[in-house]
Image (cartoon, rainbow, N blue to C red):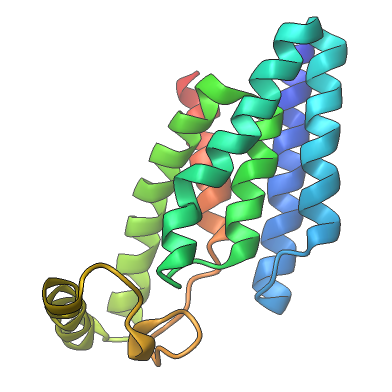
Length: 173
């Protein structure tokens, strides 16, 4: 087994633990994400020296930055953002972009499955139109009636699409 394989295995273990927590409690705890990011940076440093440390730290920052705007709009939980940062620490700066891309694709597919399962299509379309109207009138910002905490719609534990995005990025790699 190479060190790169060990890094992917570490990332998968963290994603699996996050899925378990998110499905059970609807939270991804800091006691998982913070040590995971730190250990990812340490493993990359041991495996690849200073370049690995830089790539890993940059991956954590990029992972954080990619989904942080969605957190600010209150459409994504802080645990999901911190999970992306932790995974970025494991897979590095270049790979976290692919993980984020595939996470968005998986999130869209799983969201559509939830919409169909809960027969929420019409309300979803109304909510989307309301959000676009709100942004056009008031600028881009959270709409209090449609945040993660206040929306009556079905909720998706986003660790699941993140784990799927990680798997797809690894497969494509």
